Length: 294
Image (cartoon, rainbow, N blue to C red; front, side, top):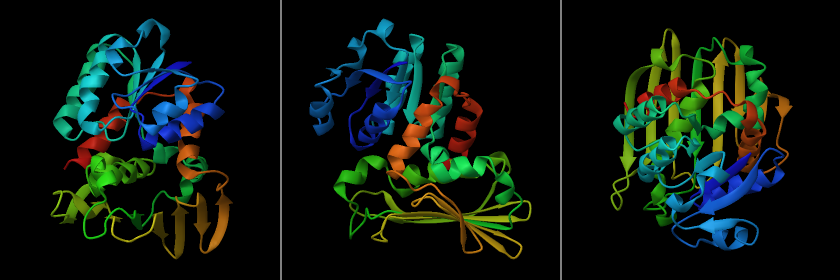
């Protein structure tokens, strides 16, 4: 499958690493307005273009867009209009209205379009997809996402992420979609801490209820660590999904260990590995973003 990657920043590095290991992906073009470090490293083997409108569409099967979210709609619409399949890095856009508009545009043009919810392709999550009884019918769920992006102010190199909730809330919600119906989630409480220098949140807390199940999501950029955990309580049992180490732990015992390679590169490799049979799901995109922006 002939692909192009638009946006050659940090995340695109993970894309390229994974693409090199995928038998179904042939990176034929790369695109960015700026000659990033990645640009210089991959342009030895791949044709690099600065204007995405100059990409010869008859030579491309699929487009991956990893630019900042505020640029997604315009770039995606160009390829959707020309009938080229599009995948966006999450989130789709920076507000629900433009996300709905983008989904409608793809439907109107009958062009396959989806997002890469990369948490769904961690080794530990792929294991869970085949063992959903472990996490269904839980009493409590607590998702914790810690990143070392704040020290008196948000790291300038992370400002493009749009804040803690926009960047990581979408990951938490996509994971929850495995075991609950997001439409049934009722938001009970939320609060956030704001970085005065940027106006973006560096800490975000949300509480939900669904029937008799309690769900909490805590995202913190001020913990000086990189750690992603989901903790389920079911009766007397505790199930820990250690996303960082790609492990599943039940009552203190590791029942699955998928920590064999770099976490993010593994997510994208697993995604690319199923690309030829991928089930496009715009309803999931809509539901996740509806909850993201409420």
